[in-house]
Image (cartoon, rainbow, N blue to C red; front, side, top):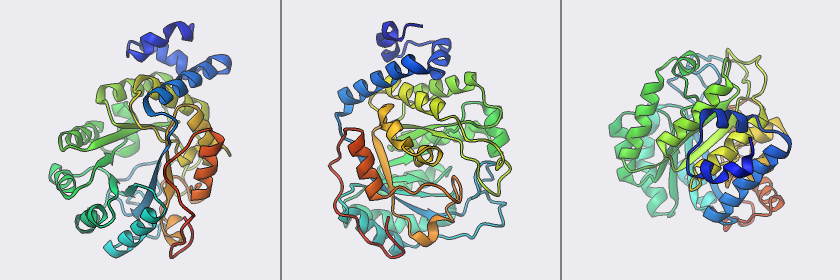
Amino acid sequence: MNFLNQQEQIQNGQITKTELITLLQASGSLQQQLFRQAREIRQRYHGDQVVVRGVIEISNYCQKNCNYCAMRATNQKLERYRLGVEQIFAIGTHIKEANIPIIFLQGGQDPHCDPILEEVIPRLKKELNLSVLLCLGEKPREAYQKFAELGADSYILKFETSSPSLYKNIAHTPLLRRLQCIRTLQESGFKVGTGNIVGLPNQTIDSLAEDILLALEIQPDFVSSSPFIPNQDTPLENLPYGDINLTLNTMALYRILLPSCLIPTVSALEKIQKGGQLMGLNAGANVLTINFTPAQCRDKYAIYSKQRFVVSLEHAQQTIKQAGLSSNSFKSPVLMSGGTP
């Protein structure tokens, strides 16, 4: 396939699954063409600005029992925690002081967080003037609508895989429910993020192509691709890492096919390979998330692994500079109770 001759067609969304499969497996000069086109489109739609957000991982309780996640409900080895209103707000002030405009509240699917969020979201909006991004799993329509009414701006709910059978095997709940929640979020007025995991057991290149087609159907505001990371104390702990090149190629295709989307370069890339997040920026990503979770909680938020890579202000600054990009965010690193971000 001559990629250069297909660029206009791809940008117009006129791409077949066969072509997607070819590009997903791109290597060598074809992969570099793919990445170059992704960067050119990022520049055209977003300039050279990287969006920076500060995450607080507010709870590691979860109702779900996903095979890849150590926060799964049946994991008795994990020490659980849940942050309160004043803890979240105090950390939010550090995010504000660091000149980061977006506070990202992430947690397991924990309904006991809902009253905490209902109290803290308006304070983060009114007192700190922060944009509020949530990633808290599947919830009833009423909960989503309440968060939107209180001022939350956006919500991430990854579909993980487009294969209903694979999703059911790893998450033990229906993919359709997940997709209905994504639609409900859009109907509630949220900017919505979604995306997939690369390297799940029994995943095929065909289903990865279907993942991209599903993202095109959803038309999200943010989209991400993350490599699978084997996690201790889970049924999948002995599997290999997801393929970093497949992940980067997926990211580049998301950028080309969904040019206005924000695309993060996730910390899992850095976990697999030093410089992985820089590789993500070079494949068309334009978002970095800095971790402000208190140090005593970070190891308990076992979403990837106990030895996950934690993104600091310094690492983010260096990565953005190495990519030849810039950000309007960042002041001097801020000390927090429990350690540095």
